Image (cartoon, rainbow, N blue to C red; front, side, top):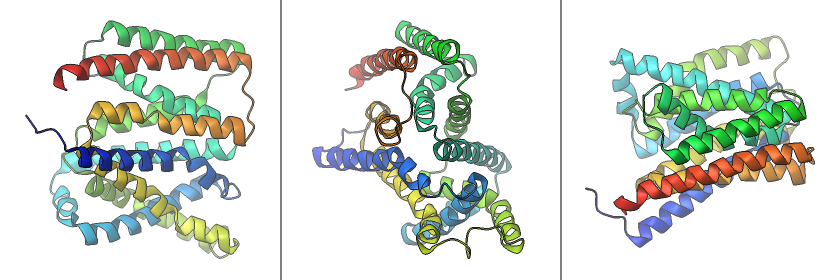
Length: 299
């Protein structure tokens, strides 16, 4: 059994987790400033500049050997490639959703993601569902049903975020790589495609770089740092905090996104939407209580 973390380590981990979650929660502010650029081009830039950024961190912190060794393991490369495709899809749906005025629906996807992981564990891994988990899923399903029937549309953006993130999380659980080398490998595998796409855009005169203003250019080039920095903070947090604590703190992300969509970008939040979210939040409360109950014997 691992020894409990010291109070200073827990404090450091908590601040690191909140820093990571705050960055992710405020992501809409960053991507909104780049709304004039096609989402697919933004994601290509994110891949390329993330690889550049993470390469610098790997030189500084070490980990290139783990990346190189991975290429001798075909099964690991296959899983990582699949994970890379899924996280790319997740980024694309999120950025497109934010820049087309659907920040609240993006937050819905991340609110539902933990419950989607429970569903995945039940039907893919054959894990047992507790009573609280079953009720939580039922409440979430009721919330989505209200959204479809009352608001009048299927929340495709939220469902896209849920599907890609749940699949990505599932594959990441099966990789032995640490966070930084794992992310480096993910970006490395798709970087040639992303770079080829950006070069084609530049060749045809449709790329943002060289045609955008200075502020936009700086933001595009900083997309790698914006992506990698919270990942590093999260990796630091994971070293010092229990998974239960991380699981509860993660709701900080969609809460920030929801408040941005509602209060800053003035997206409509009707009574029907409020009812849908209330059911989903009730499900999350039950799920969180179940997390705390399971963690108590190990405390």
